[in-house]
Image 1 (cartoon, rainbow, N blue to C red):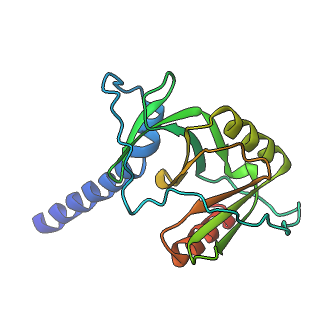
Image 2 (tube, rainbow, N blue to C red; image 1 turned 135 degrees about the vertical axis):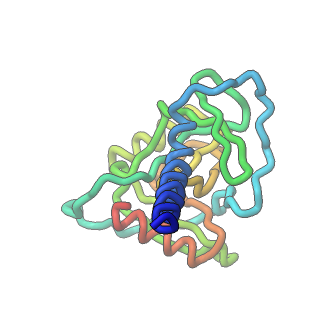
Length: 193
C-alpha cells in the first residue's frame, strides 16, 4: 500500500513538472522580467533554424475560404537580440531573445501552410497569410526592419527569422532543420494544433 502511494505521488509530481515546462515560454513572455542585463546572445544554436530562403517562389494555390479554423497555439512574435522597451526576455533552447507580446501574428492570420524544399534541399514551411494576415505581416515587417520574427508553437521556439525588408507578398518561409520537421510542422498547423 505504501509503495503504491509513493508511486502515485511520483507520477503526479512528474505530470505537474511537465505541465510547468509546457507553459514556461508563454509565462516568460507575459511576466515582467529584469532587463538590467541587456547583453542578449546574438549567436543562434545550430538546432534552431534562423535564415529565410533566398528567392522562393510565391505560392499560387490557397485553400477554400470555408476551411474551418480551430484555436491554435501558433504565435509569431516580433523579437530582438537586444533589450527594448516593452520587450520581454525569453530564454529557451539555449537562446536568449527579447519578444514583444504586443506585436504578434496568430494561426487565425493564416490561410495555408506548405512544407517545401528550396533548390539547395533546405527545408521550410511556407506560411501563407489571409488578406488581413498579409496586411499585419507587411506592417510588422515594415516597422521592425533589423529585428526578427520569432516563430513558436505550443510555447516552443520553432525558428527565428531575420527581418531584412518588408514582406508584402503574404508569404513567410520558416526555416526547418529537415524535411521531416517541415512536414510535421505543416501538419500541426493545418490540424489547428
